[in-house]
Length: 141
Image (cartoon, rainbow, N blue to C red; front, side, top):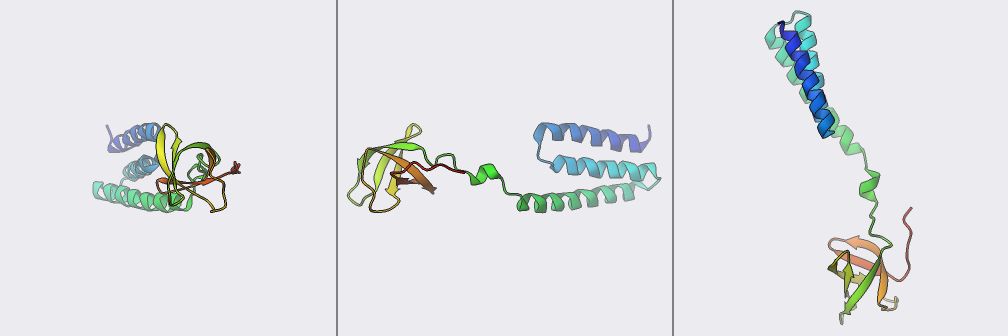
């Protein structure tokens, strides 16, 4: 069997694996393997086939990293906790509170000092591992 067939079979296997992972990195490697197969089909030596494939993998990885860094995920910028009610367990002397939310206790503080300390408040923001509370239920866009 000719060497280019192995290159193309390897590219097909990598495309199949890429479908299982969804990271696009294996797709870049598959494209590089197909380029190596094309070089073999055109009669290039094994050294040129390997060099072309390696350069294609590096170029594809660099391209993919730059492309992914410019993409912002709408899901990562949306915090689903905002607007959710919390039950205050205990108020501390400094104005902070201990609240019950999602089956656990959280540290929380008020958004502004003028908010009445009631038993049920709403999450205005998440800062680190603490919650910022308000008395208004906000709706995220």
